[in-house]
Amino acid sequence: MNYNKFVFLAILIFFSSSCDKSEKNKVLTILNDDYSYQTGEVFKDSIFNGVVKYFDKEDKNTGYATYKFGIKNGPGVLYSKFGFISDSLNYFNGLENGFAFKYDSSGKLLFKSFYFQGLSVGHVISYNGDGKIKEYYFNSFERKLLYSIKQLSDSIFEEKGEEINAITFRKYDQKEDKLMLFLYILNSPYYKNHFEIGIFDKNKKVISSKEIVTNECFYEQELERLPPEETYGVILHKFNSYKQRDDLIIKLIQ
Image (cartoon, rainbow, N blue to C red):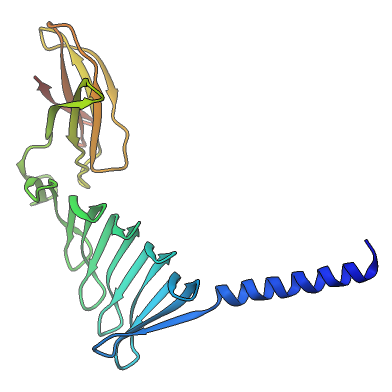
């Protein structure tokens, strides 16, 4: 490569990288009808890409959200009028996903709740003013309360509802008839627990079992056909701190 060509390529690469950097650093500000506004870096002149900050009409920062190519993806925060965080949540593909946190006017945590693809489902944990857990409860996709527990004293708890909420249903996939299990996965902060799927004989004794591992608040699995004398069941291992071992709760699935 001769000298002139080398200099030309070097200049071309410099201007190309400068243009790319300029493109990435463009900022867009959108003014709303109430004179509040949001501002952040954009992709292709009009699509938010990165952290977008929100301001009221008095230029006070009221929160931020994280965007990826125009869609909310990542953490978002709202601030109270006193400057404390009032809400903290995470987005995935534009929808609330994972735990969302709600705080009072002084910044103390009130409760946290779980979201799955924009739906509030599963775990809700409320807190006292001193930061201690007040109550845990669990809601279904239909917003029905399935279970709740709160501590009345050091060793006394008040529990309501069922800890094992499982159903079976048939799923027809490409003319194939599948037997499916759907199970809500409770996770009380007051004790360690885990769920298993077990196979039981006609005397309701466990033949085999397998632990369920998931980060979601529900679990779905296809079940293989069993002989007539066998049946499936869900086993909840619930740690008993007084006995220093697990208590077992079993629900057979017909």
